[in-house]
Image (cartoon, rainbow, N blue to C red; front, side, top):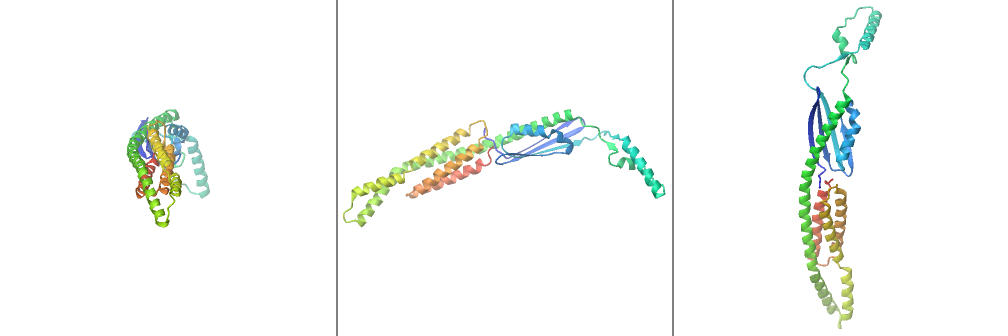
Length: 287
């Protein structure tokens, strides 16, 4: 299954009086790079969240953003009596030192850091809710990656067909290229020699035929294209394998161009390199 590494997904859920939200963004990357952004009060679940993501995503730069908000309605707070008592003692000391009475209301005391305490989070229930939310969001992200991957696959297959057509054209041109080479060499020897040595000509033709033979390059190109088409139907991530095959295809196309003695063969080499580069650009975004 071909999957794109570029995708976005967002999801929300509720846990008691809390609203949870999760956003996942992924772009192409050589390896799996996970960044998790979340409030400190949710850090206890970070390790499990990373495990869930890495179990489903194998490649890409992925950013996970988690948020928690209190829902509107009754809010419960607890007052820490120890902090209040310490605050009163400190106030009395300040009043004695300043020699005048200072007036503090109950609201002033409540505004002091640490006086109001929020209820303890139900970490077990909240952790389960977070993991369920992240799993659902990953499923959405994967669906998007697979949908875009199907489009990438169609584009790559289209270009593979064009590469195969160029290979077939090159194979058809080989006899004509050799005939043309023989004629050019014969004409050249006839021009410069009063008595042409045609035995020597045959030797030169054999040598040039071996030196300029492109059959192996065309066979390897054909083999690599067949492998690309096969790999794209595998179920596991294939991005790195495809990237390697692009390097091999490009190497053979370059060799083909360097051996060319015919304008049509040169054009075939150029067209092959253009098609391979187009595939390589798409492959960079495949998981």
